[in-house]
Image (cartoon, rainbow, N blue to C red):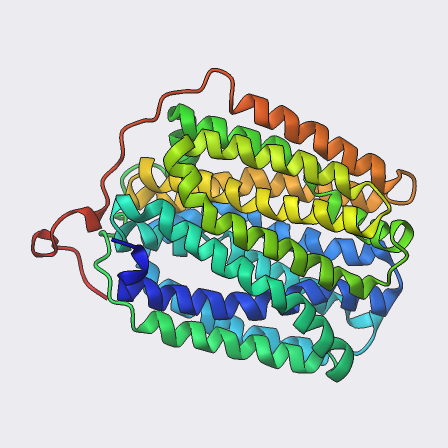
Length: 409
């Protein structure tokens, strides 16, 4: 049975899609906003750095998720963001750039706290893991097909204030949608027991002990260690390579979202036929080809590369996310997701900072070529000597409803 026939998942999907539309419409415009205020490509690139910095606190966030009831936690986060983004209404000049960076960090915090993925473990049976994550990514990226262009249009036509109000409203929609989802959650991790340090590091220990997870996470870290330079290089490619204004970034994001939406829908088929590692290999191959195409100063070729990059990114997310879901206990989901997020976001943060520092001395085409080389290496790493798939850790939703004893929310 398709996961879309599950009413609870549909509500979750609607809330995530609507809030994702508002998020991508605004936070992708934050970079353009920063550039307009300062005239600096580096200032625009730093927006993406602040998006990734919260990942450094991932172990604490993962521990929080495993100690809390996930649904109430998510509702509180969405409600808080609905109020917090309104602080952007105070931005008037380059002196207020810190508010844009603070908002970017808040979005990064929302992105790295693994509450939603942890909730999915209790909400859905194991057989639905790959399909659920595929739909969540496909709809989120599908929204990005129109949201960046729509956000840029609103930004240019009506100003950023309208965009801020729109995003705040989408968080309210997410709160309402999630409030109607009834789920039997696994009992939160008990207080006490092992030392705090060991509990915080439990996610890292689990990833290290499961060879398939270790391989997927390791290659992702290697990729993220270089891909961050693209966040700054793309503005140079748009400006110097294509001769377009910074606002053209909204079009690039929409094209990338179209590729991601297509790949998200196809991910379930790839996972079933190739497994998590095979799907990751396809993803890295697409990314390598896309990066090389983006080095050319031809608009059709460049956009073709953007489509391939858009297709590769969600396939990596689905392959790793499915593996985390299937091979990790429910009350380790938060810390495993946080562990992977910390090392990957940390690597990405350093590469974004490097990109912002190097963009004035290193040609953007060299940056794209370097990312392509690493992507090919990652494709080989997940293809050669594949570890066997471990045993699936059952979900609470795999057991009949009458046998569950955990609290329902």
